[in-house]
Length: 256
Image (cartoon, rainbow, N blue to C red; front, side, top):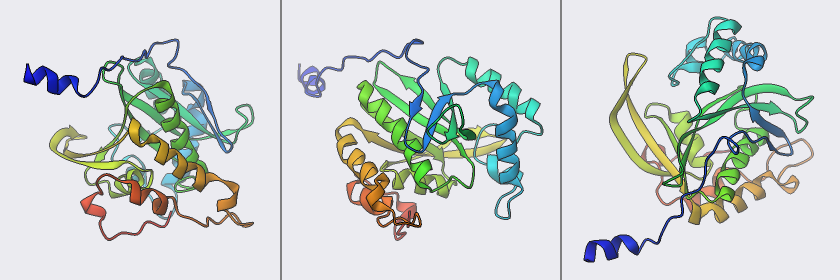
């Protein structure tokens, strides 16, 4: 009938496998490594987060403000949470290591694949918790590039970014990384006893080639001078590619 024909016009979707044998990759870049998170990283990560909390621009609350967990009072409590998190086989948490050699690199944060739906070909990235010294840097950008590239090279067709509606830094980051705004889910959750409206963003498979070109142009050695300063901002490369821009950010001209 007409309805079935309309649905079929979108084409068949061969669901991709997301099995335990796959779901523990190590992603290696030129400046970073993403490896499976485990409790052994708790001490080093706690020190990273403690330094962030002690900085002049953040507080212990700010570091974890928009996440469903934290702040952690001790490395032991962080270790206990990591143990629970990695036991959840529906998600995949990774430690971010600063440097291309896993043996010598130091932990500088965490990131995760969430909401993994092989039948729909959809995956979310989330729990982005990086050291302030890493945020908006070439290394941090490479982390997101490695995550996105891996998903689309597997054959998935949708990569999501969702964040608290009040979290403007996260919304800026999503747009800078080439995620298009999809809207606000009002009163989507209660988080730490408070209402959470959720902002949705995505990149789809048909957009990956243009995002990949933008990432690789930004990350190339030619885009950085001898002092490490960028010549082209990633936001300038991705902004023209966005299907929809976040209305909360209109008028902003991101510099990174």
